[in-house]
Image (cartoon, rainbow, N blue to C red; front, side, top):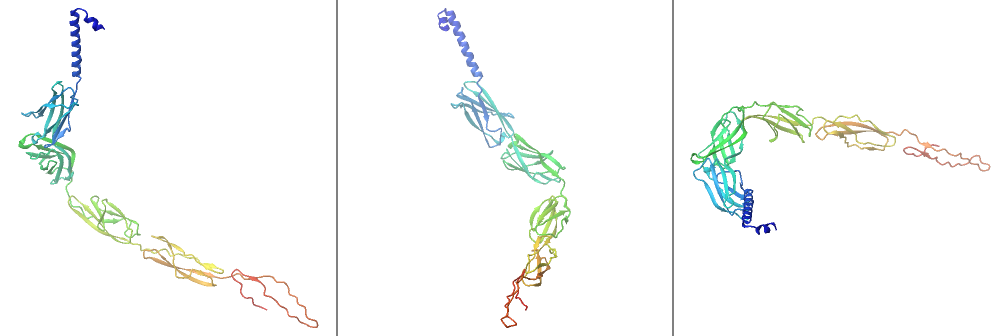
Amino acid sequence: MYVKNLLKKSSKWRVLYLITLISTLTFVGVSAFNNYQPTVMSDKDDYAPGEIAIITGYGWTQDSLVDVHFEEEPAHDHHHGYHDTKVNPDGSWKIEFPIEDRHLGVAFTVIVNGKQSGAEARTYFTDAPTLASISPTSGPTTGGTLVTLTGSGYVSSASSITVKFGNLSVTGTRINNNTVTAIAPAQSAGTLDVSITVVAPGGGNSGTATLANAYTYNAPCTTPDKPTITAQSGTTACPGSTVTLTSSASSGNQWYRNGNIISGATSQSFTANESGSYTVIVSANGCSSSASEPTVVTIEDVTAPDTPTIAAATGECSVTVTAPTTTDNCASIVTGTTSNPTEYTTQGTYTISWTFSDGNGNSTTATQQVIVKDEIAPVIAATEPVTANTDAGACSARVEISAPEASDNCAVGTPTGT
């Protein structure tokens, strides 16, 4: 309503209003463009020669076209550009930029300008070699070890490849874009950085990659003394027991038993589950040589079970004998066996011969007496008196007497007597 009334006034007021309105709209539009911040990015930060850099833009919704420009450092007289790159409806776009051998060591700046908005965005990436690992990681101070360096970015036909071990440089040999080999030079003992510098074909750009503390120089290789083996627990032991051996070599030990490696320590303990002889070898290794010494460890039980003293088994009427036991150094408890009877029911004295075997070829024997002796007499029950009357005129009579009843702890025999 305020605007409608204002327009009804003089033309002077109408002109002033229009100027104010246009200024306001212009300010709003400029502010909108000033807040417009589209982006650009690369799919990686570093590329190897032969790879394709994927450059992608996002949020360019106020532009239908963008100009993409690549600047190189060190500077190159030819600058790459992708003019009038079409923007998708969602504000995105993408280009593919090939990385060449000559780009080795080059740092790229990608500058993008919106054709309609005038907005600008930048991103950065490089082309340089990388160094992921080396093998082996150590060698003697005398040098001469062939070292393999793995990584990427090694150009297909480099002018030169230099590998540094600390401050000493050697020439590297390219195997492929991921592998370079070099001979480690003689160096004093210690751990050093390893770096690789690759120069592009024709002596152009170069790139350097470094691994910190990657290679260790050890003391010069020496032939070790022939070690001796000491049996701490003896060389004769029960099957299943542990035998501990010690080498005189303080380091570089490799233990073998019957051809199988069993340890790499100064002392070695092993358990043998069967009787027999085991050849144990310790080999003390130097950088490129070794000295070994075999010894024979015998796992054998040569001790018979203890000979027990067995108490006599006694009984009045009969005796049944239980097998006795004894102790053994390996088998612990051994139970006796016999071929003699173990049950006796006839009065008398008998001898049982027991054998105790430990299962390892050792045995001992012991005897045991068995005594069956009834020392308790039978008991006769009391009987009633028997009375018989004579016939008239006779002086004697026939009397029938029955045998009395008797009991015994073992058995009652036939009664005798008159």
